[in-house]
Length: 236
Image (cartoon, rainbow, N blue to C red; front, top):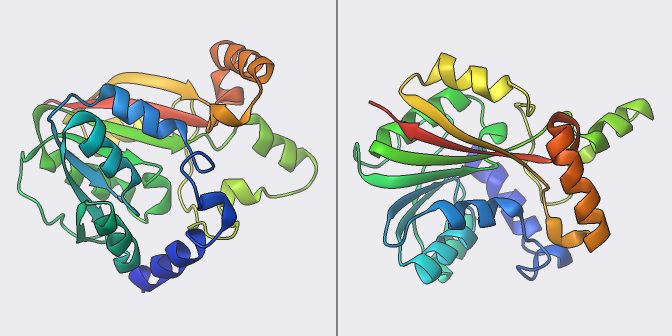
């Protein structure tokens, strides 16, 4: 049932005008991951979708990338980009990969979609070697635009992810400490190395807008951050 749901989501998403070019659909999470993953690394892309990140890493960094995704349609699209991906409901199933098989793993805007994010994070940690890194991106559920919708008596479609072609958000985290606590409770084998407040797509703002919003990120990240990027290290 989950596979059928995400097949419908991906089919609709990739038919929409705003997803027809990478420039239109660009997200800061891709820059975050590409900048931190070393050349030639073995990378596990959890919830790899249609393979955009995997293709970037293979072409720009010479990485060996394996994707996991529940949607057969998304995996077919990823294969067209040259990415090998395997079927997996990452919320509930054991990942079809060996222990300690990867140098890096990515969970970019993934954990907010799954029923058991603790399971997903533990399985990802199992797949990464000791000393390897997990890169995580999460939407900040209390960002300014979501708060403004609440003030106006609305429940944001962006918060819930109920716009056309988007899979539903079912778990919510904020910048301040929700995920920090979650890591300690669910995955003590992981150590938090880096936590970065970010805009979702800096390219959509003018230069002045980016300057103002970036200043806001530094002063009050829990209000201005749209994304939070995390770097985690597997300790044991």
